[in-house]
Amino acid sequence: MRDAASYIMKLPKDEHSAPEWQAAMEALILVAESGGPTMLARIGVMRALNRHVEQTFNPDLETHHWGKRKLKRDQ
Image (cartoon, helix red, strand yellow):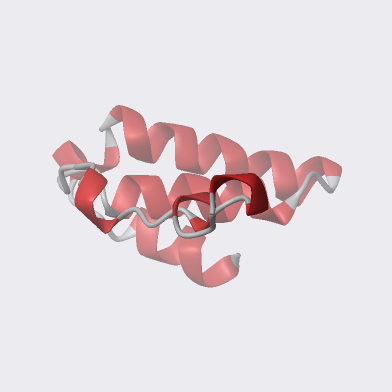
């Protein structure tokens, strides 16, 4: 957590004031002060680091286990 806090403090002012980084800092403070879940802080930092990455869904990559099996009655 200390490494994440020092990384955030070294960011330029425009990066530092982005809403994603503000949320990450809030989560880090919550974890540090009240012993909140550390996963919350990790998620906040990861979302801030990847805020410019576009999330896309490719249904062709999705494989379903129920699509391969056939019922006994259908044979």
